[in-house]
Image (cartoon, rainbow, N blue to C red; front, side, top):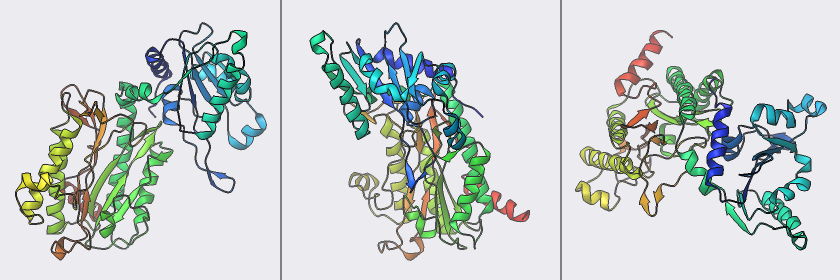
Length: 443
């Protein structure tokens, strides 16, 4: 399975340290363990910033970067090797593994951090850290600083500036390297197979969770430990709930089912949505709405390229969808005027996409100095227009009510346009109906 190589983590740390002020230190904690219930923990997933800089997969760790330090610029505090705990909870890297396998210049026991870290802060004017993300860590940082301040009369200089690390780090995460793109392509391929599997399994009489099980099987078979987010399997009117969670309704003949799901590989997310008929054939109304959303999806790709602005793709989908709703009789009026007063929003209430990377809603500003960001090669995003006609919308004919359609792909900006990472999942009406019909012939 494709993973980020260790030399890439070293390049990332070097790039961040080059952005740091002289005489500064950066301190970043690993994600804490989270209890699911009683003494049962959730499956551990590393903090994305910590993972980005280290690739170190364990909890109870703190990463320290000190640019210009002769004794070593990258220090990792981590858990000790402990044969008894490892028997119960799994292997640990220990300090030797942190240096040997994860590139640390030096490593110390996490139990010694309160003793050792204040000395690393001495003569450092500025401290970069994840301000406000973990209350306990904020208090710990201030405790270390106060221990340094207690030595001021001895001629020690204590930090005087505390700065959020994100503004330095997140622009680096926004533009993906070739190694990152290789992982994201693989994640997209695994997720694409999962969606195809769910389409092939679909039939009336199953429940939404049956299709979710098909997704989970394909994710794990492809090497993913976790979905990138809670999978949405929404049949019938449930597709009009944007973040539907229950996944327990019956699949009925004549309904559509919307699946929004993707896996995570080496902490990189994929994010795909497809909508298809439970029993393999679209009704005329479902087909009309579906093809309008697909038209918007395809039009958006024409507006993703270097020099284009972040909002260009969204505005393109708004125009396509608004014009299409007028053509179908679901909106009345002149297209420009309808867009101006946002008359489309009862049907299309979200934006056309978001940044994608280590977080499914990845880091990065959408505006810079109040202006929509200009796209650059390496930026990854989703394209996900949709139309949702509420079951209780009395402003439209009953034949349209309860139809929810979203089509979502993952793309990366290239030198000449964009690359679609999720093209392995059928999305034309003909392709979907042929796939599902073929499956039934061999059932």
